[in-house]
Each structure stands twice: as C-alpha cells, then as structure tokens.
Length: 325
Image (cartoon, rainbow, N blue to C red; front, side, top):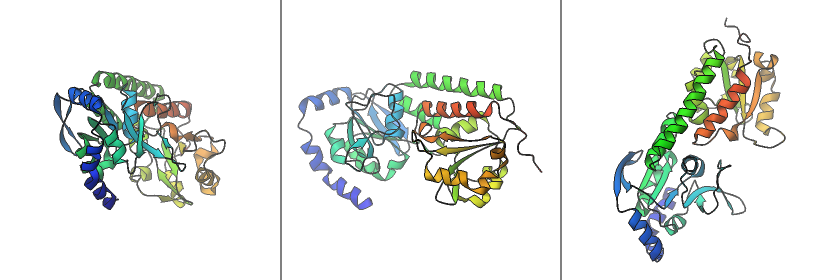
C-alpha cells in the first residue's frame, strides 16, 4: 500500500490540474472556504473552512455516517467496493445517500475521484494515518480518532468539526438519558454479570464489549464483567476451551449476518460447541444472539441499538445463574 500511496502522491499535481477546469465549482468552494479556523485532530493541527461546502469522507461507517446523523451531506465518500465494481455505503440505512459520489473503497480511496469533487474539507479517521499526506495535498484534511476512546467523545468531535455542536449535544443528552434510565431499571449492576462474545475462526472467539458502540455502552451502563473477561483486551482471539472462564449470568453473542434467516456459520459453530452449550447462561435460557450490523459504526444510533439489546435481555434476567466460588 505504501508504494501505491507514493505513486498517487506523484500523480496529484497532474490530477489537480486536470480537475481544475470547473470554474463554477472552484469559485463556489473558494468563496465558502475564505474564512478558516484552526482545529486540532489525530494528525495534528489544520486550518479548515468555517463553513465547508464540499466535504469528502474517506470512509462510510466511521466518517460519512456520523456526518449524516448530524444532518450534514458530504459530496463524496469512500465505502465498500463490491465484487461487481459497484459501491456501497455501509451502515447508512435510513439516510438518503443519493447524489453522494462514491470515491472508491475505504481501504484505498480513489484519489482522482476525490480530486474530481473539488473538496474544501476531507474528513477521515484512525485508519487513514498512512494516507494523510496524500489527502492533505488535495484539501484540508482532518482525522477524527474513532477507536481507542469512548465513541461519544468522537461523535462530539464530529459535531464540532462541522459546526453542529448543538445537534451533537442533543443526541448525547438523549443517549445519556437512556443510559441512566436503564441503570435505574436494572438496579442490579453489582450482581448481574454479562459476557459479550464474537465468534472468530473455527474454535475461537473474541471479547466484543470493548471499543466503539458496544464497548462505550457497556462501560457507561456499568456492566459487570467476569474477571477473565476484564483481563482480556479483546484484540486477540481466544480458544473455545476458555469459554468456561467467561461464564456469566447473561451471555450475548454477536452475529453479523444481518437479515439472513440462518446465523453466520461461525456463529452456529460456537452455538453448537459443547462447551458453549454447557454454560449456565445457556442452560438457564439467558444466552442470546443479537444483530451486530445494527451496532457497528460511529453514530449515536448504533449505541442506541445496543441499549435496545440490553433492555431486551437484561431487565428480566436472573442474577444468580453463575455462583461465585
């Protein structure tokens, strides 16, 4: 990828010149971008337009999605490049993405397509650090840290970035209200243990209640985790042989199959494993599969979706399924 990025950087002057013939678009962008302000972000400090008119995002679920949630429509965005050559904006269901130009796969956005949109601001995330020099030569570029911190902090930064702080704070207040209401309704946070698992390669699983929407909600609600789960960063796959150490009053298993009638094969393999079947939560009917596609992405709606999962499965759950020895 580094060789590819160097090649793109070398071609940028020609791309910028070739795409600089649309005088009307250039004039509109220049006028809107004449007043600037300084912002500090993951890659440093950058002067950006006070009122950007032509935003391009480098990814869908971690940059396009939070802007759409705030009522801001970028002119272009990278997303998922499908096998047939078409493009998809992931996790944007419920938002109108018509007219937003697809600028390539989020792993390697098409620099020529980005330049063609005459952006006055490019918005990216943690995964774009190697590409930052290329993007910043096209237009002022800001990288928002989406991972390795509470998701709502990142979402508030998106609000500040596009002058939607008031809208962001309203969404945050609604989320905070739901968290507090669930905490009050549960009332057993010190005794009701919860494990959230993601099936991995055959014979493995990962802890899923760290980071982004699910991790942020789990921390904010104050879910009780078992000791082995707390000691696991969630970055390394664990053998199913360690499942008994993740035994909790409630076990939640994430499935990214979406609307498919049957669970993902990896999910089914975990559910069928005798060690999983022997968990007290399974025996007590307190093990559940939930739709992970609704909880992935940088948006308050994704955190709300996991709050829905917790409300559905925790409020009536017993807290004596696992007895501490």
